[in-house]
Amino acid sequence: MFAEVIGGILSGSLALIADAGHMLTDAASIALALVAMQFAMRAESAERTFGFHRLEILAALVNALTLWLIAAWVVVEAFHRIQEVPEVQGLLMLSVGTVGLIVNILAAWILHRSAGHSLNVEGAFQHVIADLLGSVGVVISGTLVWAFGWTLADPIVSVVIAVLILLSTWRLLAKVVHVLLEGVPEHVDVYRLCSSMEDVEGVVLIHDIHVWTIAQGYDALNAHVLVDRELPASELDPLLRRLRKIASRDFGIHHITIQMEQSLEGCTEHHHVDHLHARERPALEEQTETA
Image (cartoon, rainbow, N blue to C red; front, side, top):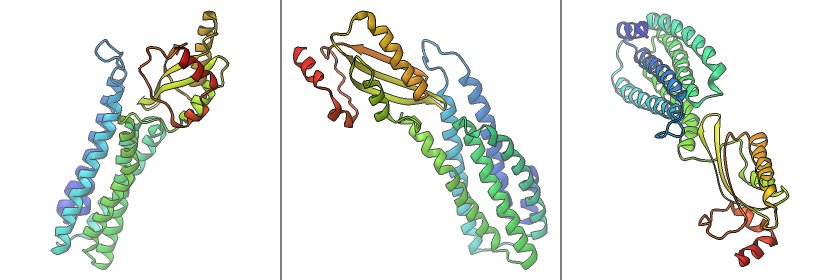
């Protein structure tokens, strides 16, 4: 990073300075990711019943937004340089950019092994990938300036780098927003989950079901289960264990809360999965009238 700052100032290259600024946020994002992971390991408390697991998601959000701010700054600065192109030393730019490229390849290789298991680590990984793309742009730009004297390549490549940064972080930002909005995890099909539970003998209807992600790899389920009124009380616990096993084994859900009901009386929750209306068993209507 320091080499790119010095090299950018001496060579007059915006692409190098932009890449250096991005490297600074790389260091900050990795530090933020590490801090968030340490906090996430803290135990739950009466004040925070889910602990600090969400800090990893917030760290990923901060990482994505800082990348967008950097991209915006690079585009504005590149626009000024296109209007008034400064002198750029291509050889120095190419040399420093090549070193930066090698460093970013090593960093990306290290983070790649864990990026798929945490949005937090993926945020840091996306920083490094965007920086790697920036280094590629610097090398290409430096080659064009050094070999052909085309100094306009520097601001143009800077804009390309900014666009690549935005594209590389869009998927990450979409994932983070989905988690913060408590959307259903990608690997969970709620329709199939409800159908699997309803197929268990003794279950009439699944309703008021909510499935969301606390943190990457830590999903939660809340559901009300209307059971057959004729089901003996001794069968309720075995039935609950079967339902929990379906959610855990077949759908990878870890935090499971199921409320068993033998009547709709007193139940104020009316949230249903849309397609289940057509699957409501005839017994439901009978039990509702009885209640």
